[in-house]
Amino acid sequence: MTTLTRASNEWSSRPADQRFASLPALHDAVLSHRNAAGVARVPFRTLHAQARDGAVMLNGRTDTTAHLTNWAFTQLAQRAGAPGSYLATLPATLAVQCLNDGLAKRAADGDAAEDALILFDKGETLTARAITTDRYTRIWNSDVTSRLLRIASDGHWQPAPAAFDGSRGLYASDQDMFAFLVDSDRRIFESLPGGGLSRGFFVWNSEVGAAAFGICTFLYEYVCGNHRVWGAKEISELRIRHTGTADERAYRGLTAELRKYAEASASDDVARITAARTFKLGDDKDAVLDAVFALKVAGITRKLAEASYTRAVEHSDRYGDPRTAWAIAGGMTELSQELPNASERVAIDRAAGKVMAVAF
Image 1 (tube, helix red, strand yellow):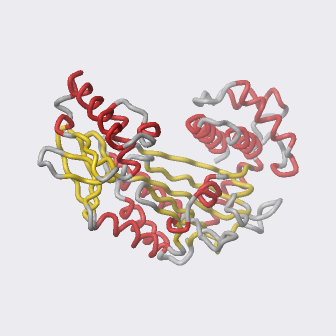
Image 2: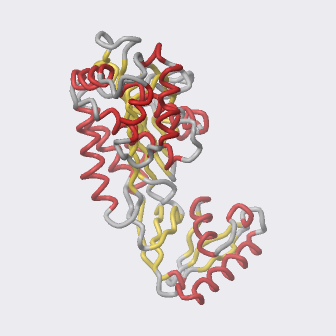
Image 3: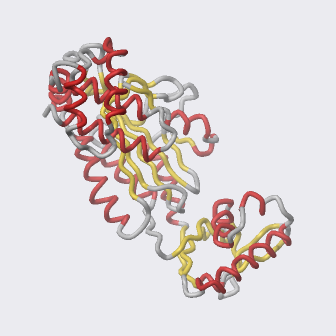
């Protein structure tokens, strides 16, 4: 088993005004952003920056001027081919010159016909929250949270246990949202050696292009006061980029899978784990490695299979017989969490799931 730190990273980095104590409060916060939102599609060639009162503003073809959030400023700088972090240190007049020069060169290089998709906040002052291309498909944070509310309506699923400061794993800003939910009531504890397991999942999204829409589901032993998830098993992560039919795929695909996971019976998990704990891939190390490698699953190399077996042997007190599908999948999951690259972690976690599936 392994330790998941994503929720802990959220907990340690979010300011107080981005923390929420309940799902309804989280939903109301992101819904307020959506209710105040407006979207405009304009040619990039008509956009230019303007300095006003020491700040960089955005102008378009209608000569309407809008403030820029830090994120939108960064996106505009990327479009201009300039480092946003550096431009932010310059006087507004100089930053505007750099931005407009870069935007003009980008248009002259053949991007003049491309459209910008601008997300505005129509509050007391008009503010651009995001500047993306027209290929971007927005998934609204409030659509994600509304589905979480429906999932939690059965009374079983709830926000994560209170952390040291009382926060419950629910976060949102003008850029993104993150939620950590658990099912503590239907804990699997009697039929599994070594302690019980509960189900949990993370969900995250950004409606301004700062992150993909994603879900990570897992079984776990316990959550500590800084929201580190200990003893995680059967980790499955899925992501959808905000392109094409992203909104439809997110709602009809991942949302359906999440609801299926959320409503599944605990006895189903017990049956799967029991089968994986008793299913031997081979009678000795070489036979186990041959069986794993013979699966021909993307991401599984002979080196990975051997390292997974070694990890299973080292933690036989946790996994039991290292020759089983449960032990090898657990070894793989531990190894994946030590990798710095997220795509590599996901690939190995999926491979571990394939190993587990051999048992049922």
